[in-house]
Structures are given as C-alpha cells and as structure tokens.
Amino acid sequence: MRRVRVDGWFVLGNHALTKLHLNAPDDGWFPVLHDLSLCITESNLPYVDLFFSPHLKKIYISPSLAWSSYRAPHDILSTITSTISALPTSALQSLMISPMMSWAELEDAISSVALRCGPSLVEFIPPIPLSDAAIHHLIQLPHLHT
Image (spheres, rainbow, N blue to C red):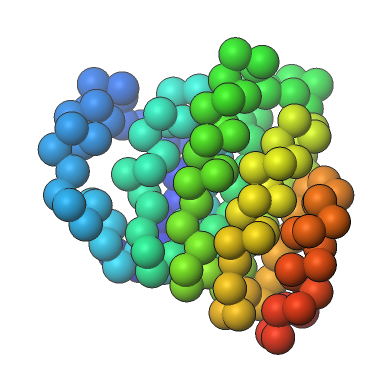
C-alpha cells in the first residue's frame, strides 16, 4: 500500500488497534507507505506509529475536528509531541501541518522534525514559527520551494 488516509471517520476500535500494534511485523504494517494523511484524534494517537514507514515521502497532519477552540486537550499534548518527534524524515519530500489548531506548545517538536529533514525535502508548511536553527537548516536545503 502506498497511500493511507487516517481521518476522523477512522473506524477501527481501540481493541483492534491494540492487536495490530502488538502483532506488528518488524518492518511495520505499511513498509512501503509513501503518502500519509493523518487526522490526530485521542483514539488513534497511541497507534499512529502503525502508519510510519521509512519510505514516507508525503505527510499531512491535521488535528481532530472535535477539538474546539483550536486547542488539543492538555493531557495529550505530550503524546502529540512524541508522535511528531518520531516522524520518519529520511525520504521525506513534503511535510504539511494544518494551521487549524494552536501548535505553539509543539514548537520544539516541529522544529526538531525540520532539523532532521534532508535534501529530498521540497515542501514544508509549518503552522507556527520555527526555531532559528530549524529555519537556518531549511534555508540550506537545495530543493525546498515552500
């Protein structure tokens, strides 16, 4: 499978996701996944790594539509931070993070991801200002257009 979309209508229950997580093969369930569109929700957040692949070229992240006032519940911000920090970036060409939420608490995690991106990155759309080090790194990437 090359493309997966995990949105607010994702229908697998926590029990099924737990089984998938516990029985994941060494190279994951989607070893050649190239394109991931991920709507982060409280129910899928602990299992997001099931969809990570070292071959990911495009990642689009958006928050749950259930989170009102553009803020994720405070008790899951650390989980969102660790998820964003764990994004695979080795083959990444495009990383877009929806501005539909206040991501300010995640500035360090998003800046860290930017610092790990390599020369294959063509498009990076962060929802917040990044650290000076991340900006400097992105400016030096040879193919970055956005």
